[in-house]
Length: 513
Image 1 (cartoon, rainbow, N blue to C red):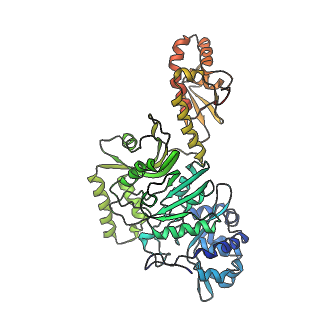
Image 2 (cartoon, rainbow, N blue to C red; image 1 turned 120 degrees about the vertical axis):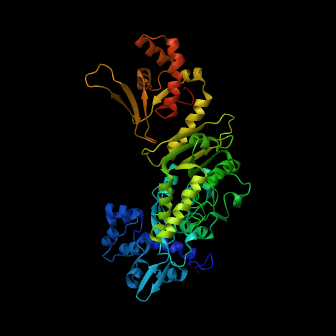
Image 3 (cartoon, rainbow, N blue to C red; image 1 turned 60 degrees about the horizontal axis):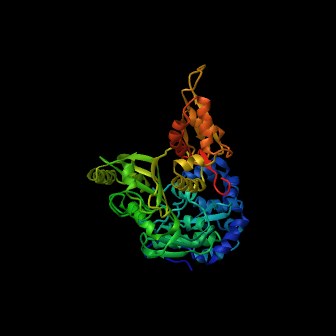
């Protein structure tokens, strides 16, 4: 039967009928592709912005798929007869708490959202009503649920994390702060064992439903904060979309860490190394403070644990007022009493002023437990569009750091390289000028980087096809330009390291390289 996780909260469906429900959803084509075909691109995109009117207009026909979209995506009641046509096992779904009947109509008790897996699998994410997109702002459609214990579904943060995660086959994976189970679901495809934790017991119930409904193996679910539920266990992969919001209070379990400032994210990063196997990965989203008088890059670099290479990417920065407004709106406070809104707004600004915070950074952090005594720690700002899924590019970035660390300048000149696919060269200068003002290499893949190079760098990259060692190419360029080859050999390795590090050049490894 359906359960109540916490006194006073809404019923959560029992997982027993999930397999049967999955069969009925598939039979009606209630999948990511099926919903896109039904709704069309415009209405489907509007749903990601929490706008339902276009989808309501597209589902007026009463077909089984239209009824399911109205039930589970739009949270509208539908006639019982139409629901039965879409869900032949409707009596059991009522008994298990997926649906509630009200006279001649039936409504869903949870949000069930189709979601496409990494390999094209048909998955479904189960969450509280109204929490699948757009945060929890103004939620009034999850009756009986304590707002502090809401469980959100698919959002931009969760899809970003799933996209950047390295998907190497692993033995053990940990989804820390699992929420509705999205990251655990992804991990189930390439991890032998998946452990999922959350401070909120309702989240563990929803994660179980998500994985059961999607046909994944049941994970090892544990309640608790940070690494407490796993003791001293170690994992090959740790992923986390933690409650990273920097707020003056812990109002909402799903977003507020309950620690001062960005201490929760710092603690998570610092403690992760002790829970990683050799060669293991930790990938998480985070917010961090920009503090007056401190370089934010140095501040973040100081978080990184010993023995781990680290790559921190800041995707956005908001000033303190923007940040407070964002999360006050997420909580629906802007629709509450104006005086209460102003009081909460002032509390945020007071806390930031006390801590000398000038802005908040948003981004992601990846750690790789390389065990080296000289780890590479890169902290950068990159607000530009990237190619998702980025996981393969993340793995390649760390592999390139391993290569560069193992090759001094002499070894680098003895190595062979190829130009990465989809790299183009742009020359910028005045029309009719004999020489360009500068040359830019630009990649259309991964991080989609661009970098200026000089004539030597452009010439070197242009002839790298894996045939000749780098030193031979440098000697040929020196002869062509009339430069001293010894001098050019001395200064070129720095340019090669830059081009390799940013992915424009790929080193050849293995026998014969």
